[in-house]
Length: 188
Image 1 (cartoon, one colour):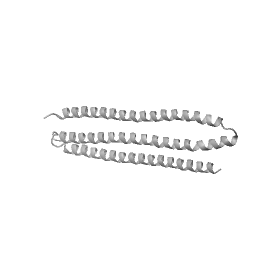
Image 2 (tube, helix red, strand yellow):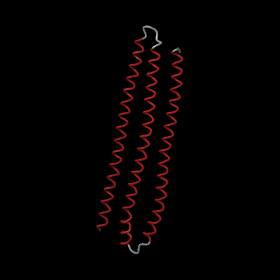
Image 3 (cartoon, helix red, strand yellow):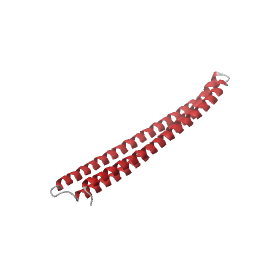
């Protein structure tokens, strides 16, 4: 049977390794999300440059001010739609990255909680008589910490859901405004 010090040392080593794995997973997933956002921005920038060149050529080819303004109005709707699509894609990438990070964190916390409880249970078998109160206190503290973490995780999840809802509502409002604006400009 190993001593409490040996058990504590093994638990500390396992905790360090688990934290390193969590950091690696988090970093990998965060970089993947950033990579997707960079790819989105690069392709949006490239497309925007090409479209701006084509739009400028069309506008300069206008024969009179009326044609110029008609072309300007006609070109505004596709740009608004592209902006909305970009916003939705951006929100989708951010949301999926956040979900993956949360999944990694939840799995890691559950495993850490399991190991801590296992360690305390194992260590409590080796405590001297009369120290049961200290073991009960440690178990109570662990239970309180777990309850606090669960409440924090729940609050964070609600905040992220609220943020996603707000972003989607903003994109929807922008889409409606662009549609109304396009309808209004085509009536003139």
